[in-house]
Image (cartoon, rainbow, N blue to C red; front, side, top):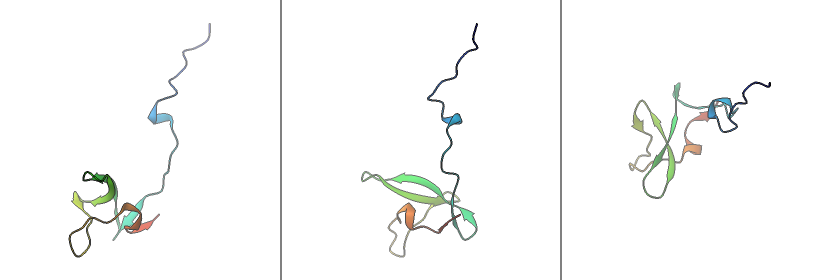
Length: 65
């Protein structure tokens, strides 16, 4: 009898993007902001914003490593 087959929907088995964004030597965590569903970044529990206090889009934060 064959062994038990694992689930195809297990996120732990998926290989994804292993590159991260860095801002001043700290990792940026992607978060969803507001009703417009803007993906922005968070560093040390604080939202990354511009000079006017508006959240920046995730792609424009720091550099990709």
